[in-house]
Amino acid sequence: MGSLGSATNGHVVIVGSINQDLVTYVPSLPSPGETILGSDFVTTMGGKGGNQAVAAACIGVVDERRGVHMIGRVGNDDMGIGLVRGLQSKGVKLNEDEVRVVGAHTGVASITVDMKSGQNTIVVAPGANLALGKADVESSLMKILSPGDEKECGRDVVLVQLEIAPETALQALTTASRLGALTILNPAPAPKGWELTEEWYAAIDIMIPNETELAAIFGLSNSDDIIGGGEEAMAKALIDKGVRLAVIVTLGARGAMLVMRDESDVKRIQTIMISEPPNLSCKFEPVVDAVGAGDAFCGAMAAYLSRGIQLEFAASMACGVASMSVRKRGAQESFPRAEDLPGCLRIEIAHG
Image (cartoon, rainbow, N blue to C red; front, side):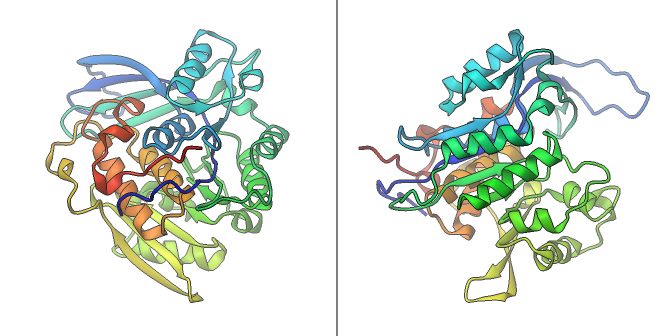
């Protein structure tokens, strides 16, 4: 895609979880009932919301006039204080008066990573994340987003996940839509028994599930139950039911599938297979750790869309950012920064 010059971008707002990640590296993932010894252990900043905010900030979308904002909650404990400071150090804007919650522990994610394949399992104890309420997100979004705020290029983008209460996530999408922002739902993790009602569809411009989340939305136990070609049919069904612009199914090493409404005929749905830009050299390097790859994709997608980049190009560039992230250990630690990006993924920051 290349450089976009210095046109003004929109705000990027992430509404979601902020966690402390406890990561153990193992020679192979344990089976149920099996105890194994890990070879390494690290604690890192995490949470799908925090990860996506850092990914968006890292690739260079932040400027003083707009920026990447995080709406979430942490406990009033040492972990929470450290996470807030860490996010701020990476260029993410938070309201310190609102983010800390008394009487709840900071969210924690226990992650086990297979050192051979880079695949992982994750268990989350959400803690303070569940204290983020409907009134909280509505108030915060109204402070950040200004209806009718003119931009030279791009638009405000609000990205939401489901590591917070579903009713809070829905309120965030509804409020953002009312304020004219482009809304993105990353339905991760898809809660058991969660049903996409008309209210959800009416507030979602773009949905970004992986194969497991897509299966869960349709009541399947796991992605292995998706019959060949089923991802496309399911994505089209979500658009038929009301997702307004597109469904992007992330497919790991296979890239992503973009299923979207035709701009010239909203009744026509087209499918495009997406991969990272062909001149991205890192794709020939070994995969080290897939933790956070989906978050890297979502955060980068929000950042690129806020600059007015077309959906297909933004998805390819986001695949490139995710591809770079799996070549290093960790989630936020692995996200590429603006100065590390090759020209095919680079954007410029507006100044003035």
